[in-house]
Image (tube, rainbow, N blue to C red):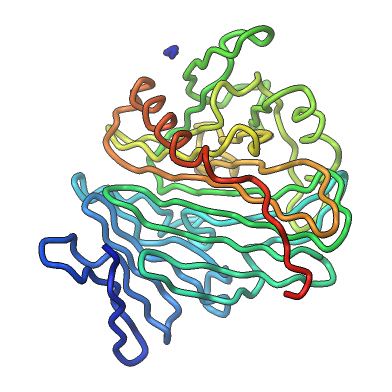
Length: 337
């Protein structure tokens, strides 16, 4: 354990390439193939594909594959095995107090490719009376940024969107918990290993006591997948990671909006489906949403050879906080729209 400018848009047939318009700038960031609904991205240290074709074999409206850490040629996304259809990163369940609304990742979305990413817009449905806008942005040298907006049309107690991320074989999980359960929150890095006390359930680390109660209010025993949480210590940082050798995959969010962090334990992936998931989760919001409210939050995935260094992880997290801190967490909704 350890304590702790403007790009020009070039259109060409069914695809466009997002390239730099000024000499000396970086190579193109993204390319969009309208026929396959795939967004390819290439950063200096990271590349991959965001698949957005809900009708394809994976059946997801957003689904990362072929994600590779370039310097080490390490495959990060689960492109084979049991989690191949889940992909690296997507918005999963939409939940309320004691209830289940939908799985966002299997709903159709309006796609808006952009110069450095893509925006997915999920219009309200009878089951989910909220408009959800999910923006993915790729930033040099190794960052996938996520910006999430929710506009509710109905009253939802304890409204939650669960962000999920799945890794290729060989990655092992880690998280940051409070060194002491009561008192000041000093982050401590832990590695999460299978053991009798948590075997068969999903380890989650709440922000506080209210978050712990929210995880067990019955919301996760509804919908397509039933699961139970093993409630661990308070999280020390709203950040969890998986590592393989020197390569780390970090997933982080704003502490005001992440009420719990989840990470599956490392175990026998051949016999244990939880160990086989190799997954991270951020439980977002968990607050009462009222009609006409606009809520917004940001998350970030960073992939590079950090060697599980808690000091480096803390530095990356502080940089994230500094960048997203000025962004308002609420926004007005135009009733005419």
